[in-house]
Length: 316
Image (cartoon, rainbow, N blue to C red; front, side, top):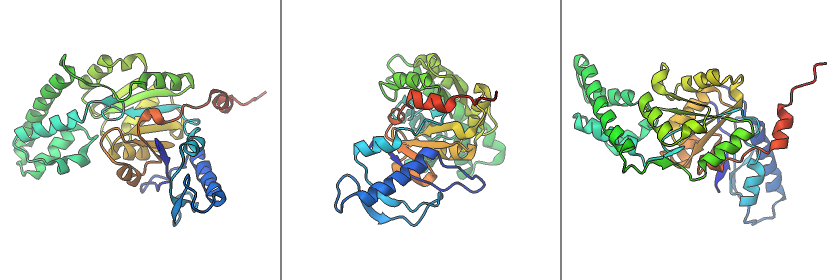
């Protein structure tokens, strides 16, 4: 399936009201499961779930036919006013280059960093990653800042060359990405980008790939107090774009840190995508409400239904 929906528990300190569509989807799946003949190939309930954060006893796991998947997920964005997308691995196809470059820069700076050690730091602010491994290596406090700055400068130079060289193959995550964003905007949904890139890297990518012509805003973790999993980038974008209700914000990303950011921000819909860093299992375990192969797999809201919901009440 391109898309799978799953209820999830909220992290401590955050109570998430699940999107109405997802609640309805689970109810529909339950009724479908009861109606399905034994041995049905389009839907199976291999084991019964023990309950979830919504108080529903949904069978788990569920395997849906393409038609049923479309049916139960077509309204997933109907109550969304803003979609906040990560860049590398979510909207930008760069083959994990940013993480490979950062890892190599740290190795050149004398830090031992394995692939396994690096993976949990996908989506984090780059200086925070360098500081973590520098402290782990036992670099004295008095030398820490100098070492971080040196490695960070090496990383910036390397990523500048890798991303903006004429031979660079960096591009959109999907050939239909801009068309998809245009459809969302026509449906009344604003689009924003957030990232762990430094601002000048983000700005360069936005212009090189033409995002400045299609998105409503973008922000770097360097422009707020803390990057992911803190919620500050989402909240800052809401303020800039005049979004009133965080429950009407959808956060999309390919890493567990993206999911955690969305949950910590209180987003009404948090989507993990399989086009980048983490697996379906990892994204679901982090608390994603929905996992899709790519951001463009999320169905565009139907115009008339959405317009009816957005209509202002008659106060006369």
